[in-house]
Length: 168
Length: 168
DNA sequence: GAGCTTATCACCAATCATTGTTGTTTGACA
DNA sequence: TGTCAAACAACAATGATTGGTGATAAGCTC
Image (cartoon, rainbow over all chains, first blue to last red; front, side, top):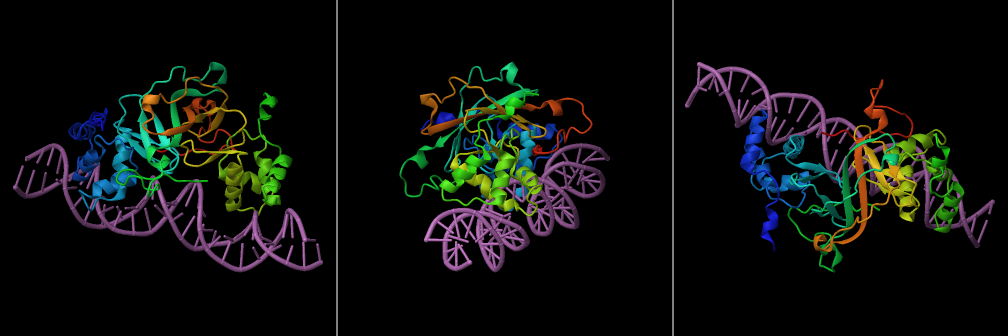
């Protein structure tokens, strides 16, 4: 396994602590715990997944606190809140490098795709009055775990890998 | 206004009626009403928007029936159910021509973008075990109505143009 | 270190989109 | 026309997320 892959572009817990304080926010044990959960997390966890991970450290932390902290981090631009059609918001600590996403249709697993697509813009005669300032590409398919015959394909991997909705 | 734009690639009400019957489904007044609402609709309505439009014809129709019929149409491949991050599913009667979408960050309005992007695929060394079988591009920005100073930018146009969630 | 102020907290209850349940109605075919 | 399952309307319920409230504690001042 390439352990190096975990060194994704994201501030450290200490840097986030500093950024929080600098913006007039208070730094609590709960928030630092959430910072730690996010640090180096490459799984695009849902709020619930962050909550579960955080609770192993701070048992009394509430889901509301997790949501609030995550959206504050998103507001500060330290993480990205994504809606990838998996039925719940996913949070991506990687905001430094522009990238796209691979989403599993079966379990909802998300992976970064650090590829730049040239020519990904709206032709002038097609803008239909929109002022476009962003483009996201989502590739869908089946992840390795859901593709192969496995004991329980619904739960290929446990922690930090929340399942997506399987509508239709 | 280009009235021709309304002749989007979609089956007529009669064709949908026939397709429904052919697949063993029953055709009711409620369903035909929904077919009519969708026919030529270029606004990517939400279930709620279809519901509202349908109710002007069949006052007693229930939201559940609308959801059920829309997802059956999606299952049959006659329309597409989209999750574009606006907080609710949007339905696109245009399934014939491959296209992408323009989404307004403010009001959630969606427009088709009939453009083909070359090279929109995952490089082999980046697939990370996924079996990819689909790619969607979403361009985000502000639509004409939300961009310009207007009396009530939250409701630029009324019918069939449901607002998106404005999280964060 | 104590006191103060205010953000943040935990614990609810509430919301919104969507889905499950149930008893009734109705299309499709005999 | 009769039969019967599919589809219906009218609920209640779900899951993700947010709002309200009184208690707590971070970060300042002294």
